[in-house]
Image 1 (cartoon, one colour):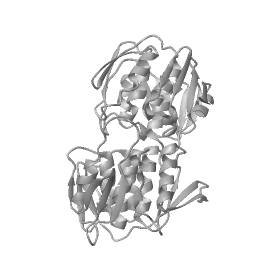
Image 2 (cartoon, helix red, strand yellow):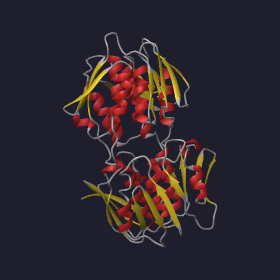
Image 3 (spheres, helix red, strand yellow):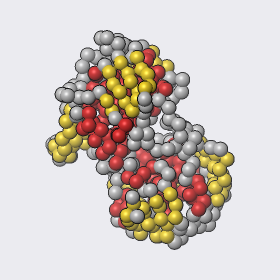
Image 4 (cartoon, one colour):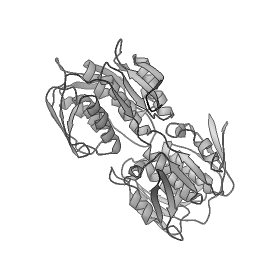
Length: 426
C-alpha cells in the first residue's frame, strides 16, 4: 500500500495535460459487447478503473489489442466480443468497481442472459441497483438477485421495447437502459433520463454503431431497436472532473497552472459557482486558464445536483479550497449520503467545518497545517491533496489507491509544476 507525502505552501506554475475521461470511458467501453465487430477507442486514460474494466472484459472472453494507429498517429485500443463469451461478470472484478453494473444491459441485449455480481466501488453511500433492474423488466426481462448476483434472462426472441419512466434521475440506470434497448424490438421511450455528458457520449457512439436514437441531450430519449450494430472508432473526451480538480489546485496554489487538453464544456455545472467565488475560467488558444478576478476569494453556497447542477464529484475539491477562504461557505450533498467523509480529515488539518447531516458549514481559516490523514474515496483523496498543497508543513495521505482509480500520474504532474509530493510505499 502506498501513501503520498506532501510538503505544502508552495506556489505552483506550469501546464498540466488532461487525457480521456474516466467516467466516459467506463460508460462507453461496454458498448463493444453489443456487436461482434471491433470497436476502437482512442484517448483512454491510464487509470485503475479503466484497467480493471479491461481485465474484466478479458476474463469474460473479449479480444483486446493495443497500439493500433490511425492516420492522426493516435494510439488506440480495440475491443471485440466475438467468440466464446461467458455471461458471468464475477465478484472478483465487480466488487471493486461500481461501473461494472453497466454490463447488465448490453450482455442481456446481445446474449439474452447474464449474471453480474452486485457492484462495489467507493463507499460513498447506498447506490442501489433497483432502477437498473426496473429498466430491464420494462423491456421484458426476468431479473432477480440470487446469492449476491443479478441474474437476468430476456424473453424468447429478445428484449422488447417499452416505456421506461425513471422515478428519479439515474445516470447509470439511463446508461444501462440505453444499451439494452438499442437491440430491443420496436420503440423504447426513456423518460426522466439523465443528461450528463457521459450520456451524450454514449448516445453518440451508439449512433456511430448504427443505433437509432432521438432526443439526445434531453430528458426523454426515443430509441428504435435495430437487429444488429457494427464496429466504430471513438475518441474519448477530456476528463471534466480532473479538469475541475486541477483548476481548483491552480486557485489553491497561486493561479499559476494552466490546463491543456480540456475545453470549456468540461465546466458544465461548475462555471457559475467558481465565478461567484472570484475565479474566472477562460480558454485561450486551446489552453484553460484559471484567473483570480477578486482581490480575495469569496465564500459560496452550493448544493450538489444532477447535471446541469453542481456535480457531486466536484464537491470535496471545492470544500478544500473554501476551507481557507474568509467567511462561511455552505456546501450541501444531495446525491450520496456518505460523501462527506473528507470533512473530519480536513478538520484534522486545521479546517473549521461543521457538518450537520448532509450540509457542511465551512468557516474559512487563515492556514491549514500538515497532518496524517486517510483517503476514504476517490474525490476525498483529491480534496486531501489540495489541502496538503495549501497547508504549512508535511501532510501524509494514506490509502491513496483510491486516487489511482481516477487520476493518472498525479504526483508526476504536480511535481512538474513545482509541488513537493512523493508517492512512497508504507
